[in-house]
Image (cartoon, rainbow, N blue to C red):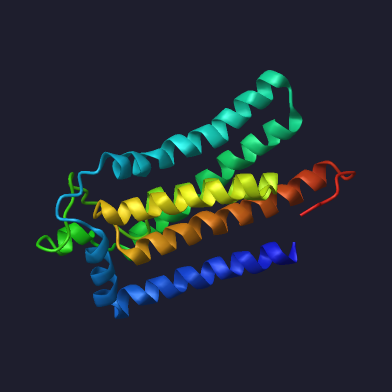
Length: 208
């Protein structure tokens, strides 16, 4: 529990840092983005990787819950519900930050420097695809404690984040903040779930 609390604090520190970075370090942000974003970002691989944030999140949450219901597996049901809650919290925090920061998309602010294959005009900070992918990866890591789950999950989430820059949709700090939101909300959601679950099931011990 102490480790979880520290990670939640780190989440808030990263968000504060990246928000501050938005105001004072725009040039490094756009320069890094320009080095990643090609003039014609038409790669089908990176487009599919970007879209996989939704498919991966759906499979990890509703897939696990459905499996638990069909097999009457209490652990799977609990994990599925926890994943849905964590992903929902990630989406909520992301949307609140988007409205609060109200950062213009890089392709709208720098139309001659950043290129997209399809226009996106809503708020840029933080990256919603990235927060969803990292929330999924963090939740799977927390629940299963296996390197062969954790490593592929975080590699996939990182690929989603990179794809958002390749496609010209987000600045690097948008992606960094999205990752922080996803990881932070997942640890916070797991911590809360452990507290509530133990409250209703006093015999359960916390193995985290």
